[in-house]
Length: 373
Image (cartoon, rainbow, N blue to C red; front, side, top):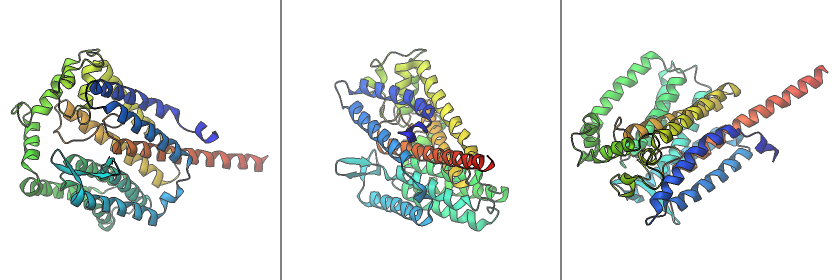
């Protein structure tokens, strides 16, 4: 019980509005249709249980290199399994069905990649002037990136790219290496456009540049999403009265376009609460950076911050027509268990590290006072 007193309840308070608005909107979808609300409520309950279990557990073992390599290797194996035996949803083979449960291995890879990069760079952040160290981080990133890209899951591949590049940049990437990767990225983009991207993915990017050029085809989802967001007004149409989602004009309203569905039912006021909650959550996590003694914990926290920023900007951006439709979930809000589990695990791990760092500080302070006394 004493350990729970050390938890940062303000963090929990910040994600509660996101969960409430998500569950309320999902409940309105469930009336007379598929029961999204009940299943998501079960996942929220499980995720909170995971949060408290991880928070109370000594996770120092996760810092050991062999354990991290095993975790990363298992994540890669899951990506290989999904490539050969995964379930195909909306044209992408990204899911695994096991004993009635469905999860997306790309979500697990996001955690393992952050942990692996944090461990590798924790002692080498001052040595990134050496291309050898930068190259190794690139290999760790590139393996899952390609496996996810060929599913094809462009959205998750983009998130993996942002996480890797962000952590390496924040760890002290030199200007020379930055421009080298920028040039390589341009070449890779041309290669992907010519040989990897499917026609529907190319159409999404073209529609991104010209959103209203094909409102009945590739731009239909984005167009309906913009209508849903705009029709919400100041205070929304009310929970259960969102016509775009309830009448199925807005596709994937429970997952990719949950923000548009929430904006329609909760209006500008609800959208503001969502954005404010994410902003305060990110700033709260940033405030933890100075609490940690080691670079490993700092980089883990920065990795999760990059995860939140990437997912939030890409998802909301595609909901309001500023980004291409890539199938990226909105943290704590989109329907689905695997991403929710990952987000709560990430959060619990950081809270765990912070709590134990503070406990160690108090312990040392008491012994110092006793010694001087």
